[in-house]
Picture 1 (cartoon, rainbow, N blue to C red):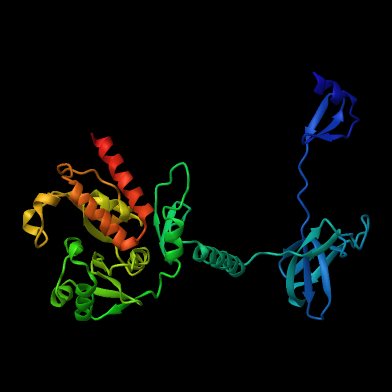
Picture 2 (picture 1 turned 60 degrees about the vertical axis):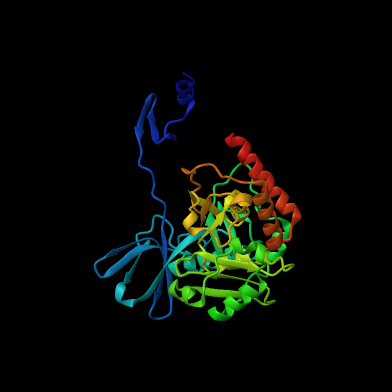
Length: 362
């Protein structure tokens, strides 16, 4: 009702909502005016002409000539308003747009594919620089940095936190170039020289020829006090450290950077420590006496399960029997973790997690 009253007050000839009032109570639809286009033509005689709404017909070009401000040079009512140009005289043409701030016509800026690609390339370089500055263990965009230049997908919970402690991060900053490749026979010598006898059960002592059959590459730290080996399938083996070296915090990230994808360990205590570096339990196998380490003490250490772990793998439930962990074996694992990492607080956190898992199972 209000619109009808408002329409009655409008004078004849008024245009509103796409209609024009032609008489009282009668409105007719009107066509919307198309936006004017402007093109600048450069002629072969070095003159320039700007035409409004130019039209090409055969050999000629017609349009209304305007100035830099868009004003028509020949006003309405004159018969010679339209400017006609022979196309053979045109050397180039440029689309023009009205700059609303300065009310002048200027060349239209069209972004090219090259400039877009250059922008994307710059953004990518900036992101790579940011990623390099991030410490190992950082979670960003649902991925965790496990080594320099290597990220793995993670399931993000309510809080995004780095899984490594400040000490881990500080130790991992100089991970690259800490370990160098070593001849396999020399690696065997260094391993046997530095590995304490009580921890030999955690390290399979392959010979040089056995390493070669597996296509293994061996690495030794610059201090010469710790090392590891990686098979051609990415299996991390023969992790060792000399007493007091505590280079595990550098060793594990470095091994990942050199292509380590899998590992196996005895019992849940050791598996929890490797989870801090992105490894997940892929399968849990029941102890087999056939593959027991030489001199294994069944009375003290019983038969713990073997945890097969994969970097960034999906956690799977065990189909084997529950771990037959004894206090003696738990204490041995505790000493081994402290031997590798030298962090008493870290050992307590891992053991607390293991105890919590046992409680949940029962």
